[in-house]
Length: 133
Image (cartoon, rainbow, N blue to C red; front, side, top):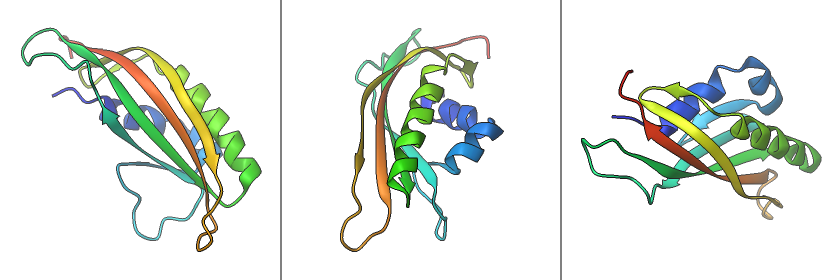
């Protein structure tokens, strides 16, 4: 079955320059002991998913959470992620990405018992199924 999340994960992980800038890239959860900086993303919903066995696509809403100990670097990393997401126009694993829109982005201060800044980028990925993969 086509997965926007899997396509995005492969896309982000194969870019060594992106990994150098951002740090670790994780899908759904962060491994125990992972050191910042890193990002973790997951699909929030896909309200336009269509009926199985019919040519379909959707509008996957993805949340990317970035973590860093430096508040200035987290802002830089949000910009890098937004640019990378906007460039995502590929076909892989049965998914063809038509375009990506950035819906929201912001940084949260660390809580009193934490030292990590959290940057959030919310994106809408418009996609369709490819039948030739």
